Length: 228
Image (cartoon, rainbow, N blue to C red; front, side):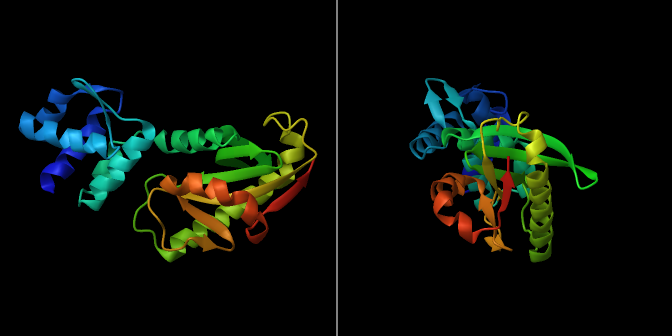
């Protein structure tokens, strides 16, 4: 298990900037080449990596899967997450929304209720706007920390709902008549609370399932209307 964990950490570390040769992975993990090769084949079959001859590739989603698996095998949470680029979380979220035909805006800044706000990721598919707070690599959340995070995201989304009429051109809503805004929090691991104040906390690898089921559950979740 230790060997597997070390190899996963090395893959995360060395694929940050793109494909990497297998020999460099085994050297970094301090694992004999033959053992590393056998394990890399298993990782490829499990969908963690792609093998291209002597080269290893890992997509954004695969890198997140590697991180989660390494942590489950006992790797230190903080050290593993240090191998993930800060913006990978938002990129994965944006890609998933786009795959589901949402227009995506990252890092939306706006003014409302006498202050400045920023939304990490905004997913827009008429008439739905999902306002996402990406909590990056939080681990071991307390209940109080989660509730504070959700309280803040609800306020942020309500402020956005009030500001949407003035932002419609900026965020591509020129032809919309109305919008339903839904706050959510995105996390790496499942949180102790799946919902608080009818607002979901969604693990990143469950985002696709959440979006599939979203239209059927909007009425049961916290949401805000905006007339444009």
